Length: 193
Image 1 (cartoon, rainbow, N blue to C red):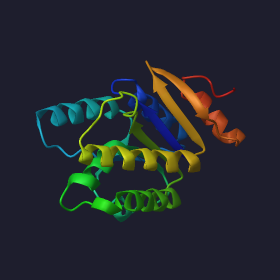
Image 2 (image 1 turned 120 degrees about the vertical axis):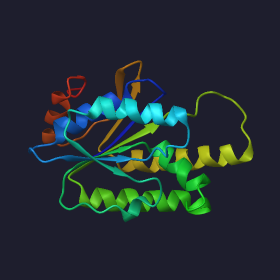
Image 3 (image 1 turned 90 degrees about the vertical axis):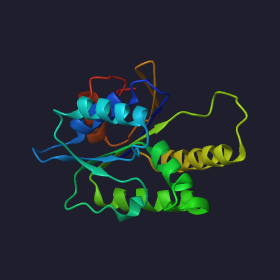
């Protein structure tokens, strides 16, 4: 299954994605958490610590990947939680070793390769497009790239969910009955719509 989970800052999207990952995972093996936040300031260190605390008892093995997602290789098919696409996109756009103008292509190649390797790939992204603020050209480019990446993932996804105030709003549900049963295990409801 390929799932895209979006929402604003503090919306509950990370908790939803972690619960979905746990529900998808069938065995006692560890799940993979691909962490994309580059720890560049005090705030990023706090956010990283908060996310580690959230998932500490959920049996994730963490892989840090700030750029070049296509280089990640899995030893075996498993459940992968990638958090988060907005950080990965920013890293590809703004980091010296990033893909720059090729960000959309590079990120989507990485998503494709991960989806081929993983049993379940759950991707978290941010909803950054509704504030109506005019940004500088570099930020506009980043937002265009992230919007295109989210759109392409959403089209390919079996599941597309926007979490608003802790409430999942389902934009796309899986057709597969087995995947719908997994959805019911998340405790967030809505899978039988």
